[in-house]
Image 1 (cartoon, helix red, strand yellow):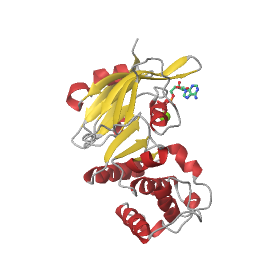
Image 2 (cartoon, protein in one colour):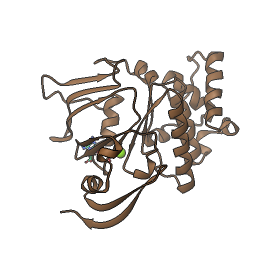
Image 3 (tube, protein in one colour):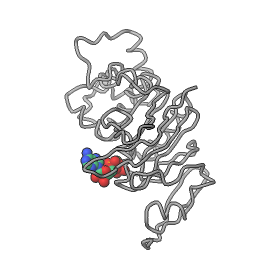
Image 4 (cartoon, rainbow, N blue to C red):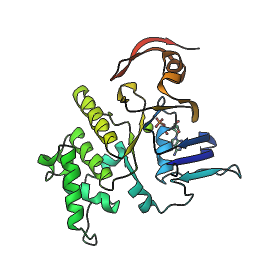
Length: 266
Ligand SMILES: Nc1ncnc2c1ncn2[C@@H]1O[C@H](COP(=O)(O)OP(=O)(O)O)[C@@H](O)[C@H]1O
Ligand SMILES: [Mg+2]
């Protein structure tokens, strides 16, 4: 089966600075993955690259930039393989549409449903199933912009899931959520990994990471700093050098957490 990502020597340059610097990375379709790194390490740039909002700067002749085995993608076809939930997406939906319409719009990769969209009974059924799966049926006729942050985020996840994507990318999913909601979102992520969709979680918080995640990719200053399994690289020492501050990583069966020590690492 093709990999989700096959990148060789991929860089993104802005203002003469490499904000992604010579990324060599394969992500298959078997693993749930976390991409973790400090603020400004290039995580969102990486996502923009995948959704076609940024392009790789082809500084090397042998750069490879493949998604699902292909170098070129029609972005609408790609979006049916790949679900993405970013925090920016939230602002796009301040246009009076209901939660249900937002979910339906996932079939058209649009921000809302318009008269030229042909909505089938199958789509309505599927949207209802996903909404039910996420436990938000009671809210589906409310306008998205009248919902709390956590509620509307669940609808955006439902929107991303209607196409049964092979991969769901979540950018800083607990951003703006309180403790209870962050925990709720972890259960949603865990539930999604039980169906066929794989998760690529992008975050700066170890507390977002669910036990189903088996591969850790550390991003630092636009470069891949480490890449491996929990046992191999996910430890206090490595995390301290990733974030540039001394931390103690606490691992339980279910959760990861940080006890800050706080001294800067020189
Ligand atoms: N369009 C841009 N022009 C110039 N610099 C940018 C642009 N987009 C991002 N950057 C810079 O690239 C770095 C990585 O940004 P970003 O990908 O948003 O990081 P993260 O999501 O990890 O916080 C930051 O230093 C940011 O200021
Ligand atoms: Mg970001």
